[in-house]
Length: 96
Image 1 (cartoon, rainbow, N blue to C red):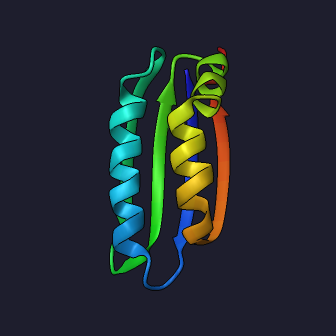
Image 2: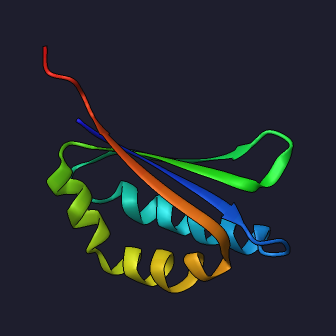
């Protein structure tokens, strides 16, 4: 299992546009082979703080997602220019 947490700080005035683009990204990403879940959450009381929780079967499935045409078009081409900040962290399940 592979988890990615992407945190977006949306530039003022771009909230609605980013949410519409993220909705399109969610739908396309959920159709990818290896994607277990893909959900976006707004911070309570702050419409400029958005977090994406993405679960994949493997790191390879996540890399396939990042190489997809919809990732390049939506995230890199349209969403990132509307953000004030963006961080991405990845996690794996510990082996016991």
